[in-house]
Amino acid sequence: MNRVLPVVFVLALSAPALGQTVDEQGAKQLSENLAHYIGKKPFDIGFVKISVDGDAYKLAFDFKPVTDLMAKQQAFKFDVTPYFILVKPRKDGHWDVSADVSPKGSIDFVGPEGAQHIDFSVSDNKFTGVYDPDLAAFASATGSMAGMTMTTREPKQQADVTVGAGTAAIVSTKSANGGIDFTVTEKITNFAETIKVNDPKNGLSFPAAVKAPELSVDATGKGLRTKPLLDLLAFIVATDDAAKFKADGAEFKSLLTAALPLWERIDGTYGFNDFVVESPVGKFGATQLKTAVGMDGIAKDGKINYAFKVSGLTMPQQVLPSWSVALLPTDIDLNFGGTNIDLDSMAKKTIETLDFSKELPADFGKQIFADFLAKTPKAVLGHSTIKNGNIEIAMEGEMTFPGKKPEASMTIDVAGYDKIVEALQTAAKTEPEAAQYFPFALAVKGFGKALPDGRLEWIINAKADGSVTVNGAMLKPADAVQDNPMMDPSDVTVPDHGSGENDDGGAGAKLKP
Image (cartoon, rainbow, N blue to C red; front, top):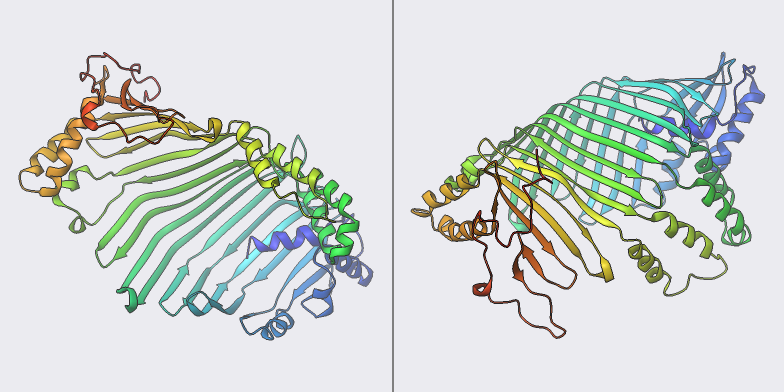
C-alpha cells in the first residue's frame, strides 16, 4: 500500500497548491486533474470521490462499484475495504499528504490450476508526505505499518504469509539532467511464510516454511522522467479509441520521444537477514541472502547488472553424499550483467517507423535485432566467488556475438584445489560416485596454470569459429565447413602443470583479490 499511494498523488496533485483556499471549487479541480490521468469513469461509478474535509481535501476510494462491475465477468472477483487520503495545500505550492489506511480484502480468480482465493489484511498502515508538483513526485514521505497477513488457496497448494512491523521512506530531488533523483528504503520485521503442497498426481505432498527476522529493500534512481511519463499517460487515457489514436499518432510519437531515456539509472537491493527454510528434508539457512539489480535507461551504451549474494549458507547434510559435505560452499557472490547495450537506437528507430495506419514491416523485428547485435553488446560475468573454509573459486569473463555467433573468454582461479582432489581421492575408495569424479578432477588440474600464490588458474577462450582453448591448449578445434565431430579427447594437448609452456595467461592479474 505504501508503494501504491504515491502513484495516486502523482496523478492527482499535478498543479501547485500555492496556499489555495480549500473549497468545493478546489475539490472539483482536483477531480479534473485526476480524471486527466485515470479517466472519468472511476468518478462516474463512485470508485473515487474528492470532497472538502476541514482544511484539507478528502480522496475517498470505494471498491464496491468496481467489484460489482467485475462480478459480471465471473472469472475475477475482489473485495477491498474503502479507505481515504487527506491532502492539504501549502503556501510554498507543495501539498501535505496523510493517510491512515488499514485495508482488508479478498481476491478470487481462475488460474491455470483452477480456482484461487486470496485473503489479505494490513493493520495500522500510515503514510505522510510532502508532494512537489514541480518534481511530479514526493519530496519526502514516510510510511509505517503494524503488520500484514495474506493467505492463498489453490487446488494443489496453500500458503500463509505474516509480516510484522515495517517502515518506509522516500526522498526525491531535482536531477541535474532532468527528471528526479530518488531514494527509497523499506524494512519489514518477522517475515514468515508456510507452504503446503498436495499434488498426488505428481507424488508431491509436503509442508515448508520460510522465515526471516528482517527483510529490507533499498532503491536509488537518477533522472526518472516523471513529468514526460505523466504526459504520456494522460495522452493514452484521453485517446480512448483506435481512430483517434491513428489521427494523433504524431503527438504520441513526440510524447514518447520526450519521455526517453525514461531514467538514467535505477539500482535496487532486496535482502533477508538470518534466512531459514524448513523442509521435510531438513533446514536450509543463510545469515544473509541478498539480490541486487541495476539498470540504465534507454541509452546508447547502457549497462545492466545483477548480483546474488549468500553468506553463512547451511544445508541439511542428510540429503547429500557424505564425501561432498566438506566441499559445500558457505559463501556465494555472483555478479553478472551486460554492457554496451544500445536500446536508444532501437527505441528511436521503432518510434520513427511507427505508423498507426498500417502494420510494421514484416522483417522489422529482424532488422532491429541485427542492428542491436551490430553495436556489439557484451554479456559480462563480473568478479564472482564461491567459497568455504578451505576452498575459494573466483571467476570472471565476457561474451560477445560477432557475426551472430558467440565468442567468450573466462578466467577461473581456485585456491585449495588440492583439497578438492584429496576429498575425492579419499571418498573414491568407498563411494562409486566419487570414484567417477576423481579422474575428471585430475584432468582439470592438468590444464591449470600454477600461480605464485599457490592458486590454479584456467583461462578459457571460445572463439566464434567454434574453437576452444584452455591456457593455450586446444580443447576443441574450429568447426569445419561441413559438420565434423569434436576431436577425440585423446588428442587433447594438456600442458605440463605449472610449467608455463603453452599457457595463455598471466599471473592471475584479472582475479587478483
